[in-house]
Length: 268
Ligand SMILES: [Zn+2]
Ligand SMILES: [Zn+2]
Image (cartoon, rainbow, N blue to C red; front, side):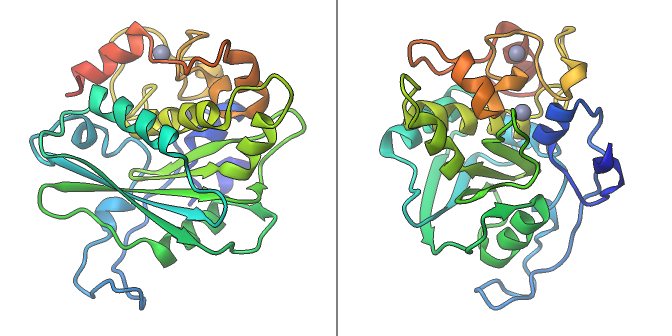
């Protein structure tokens, strides 16, 4: 239960793995003050809240009719066109964004670490992110990182974490280790599943900002779904679990219970 004392830690997925209930994290806020093009008056605080805090704004189109994704990837780990197409389809099927969804991809050099904690990832985001909410456009940050997650265990290789209201990280090197195994699903299938799953947390699933419409929260595993073939089942975020969960190369979708939650909170 060491995580409970890390006040700034905000990883729904890891909490799911460890079975810790509740978000237990505090939002940090502040003004951009570095030299990467952010002006002093830009308000970054709206994008530095807890996972699920922007669920309704992501699902509904009234306040933010457009969504922009600013995605960074370490050289060599660019998400494929197939992955991005799949992900965009998932978003269009669930979100009311009449002005559209746009994605900007930017390559970065490796930060050079073998292992990253969420604090490392948050610091990296604060250094490189340039896209923050503006009138009518909700902005989300994604990072495809090399190395591995500091909280991995022998049987739990984390493939992705949603760690702020509009931020997620994908452990793209770890995904490739699993997709490279004999008879394993393709990199695109694994990567899409993890992307959709982490975005599902940003959409407030399960009981993480989007209210439950039925009893389907797997409380043992935190903010996850009790349906074994649902995208939001807890094993969908570890390599070991996902290899067993995916059959025939099919990307898991949301079950009826998760869909009903999203629809009741403004989604499609
Ligand atoms: Zn998860
Ligand atoms: Zn579900």
